[in-house]
Image 1 (tube, rainbow, N blue to C red):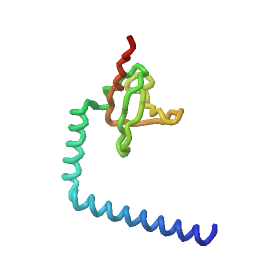
Image 2: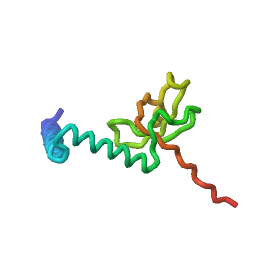
Image 3: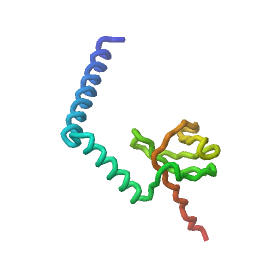
Length: 117
């Protein structure tokens, strides 16, 4: 590796670590205790349920695709449940592949109305 590339990578790494530290301090100031963190988590779950989400255990079990939220991910994924409840598995659809999942919430995918006459 050339020296210039190594210097750029080291600088980028230092910026990334600095941002991680700043975000950790920000979270600690905003959410100082476990109880504060749990209260925020519960409020977020309640709000998502108000927006039409439900616990993943209530997802369709017929192989149909639905939206899913996994703990630790900020994305909404397309997912399906395969197998017989409760011994089946959830599968995330990503880039023409399937990935095992453990979603916490699901939401049915709204079908677009066909405006054809």
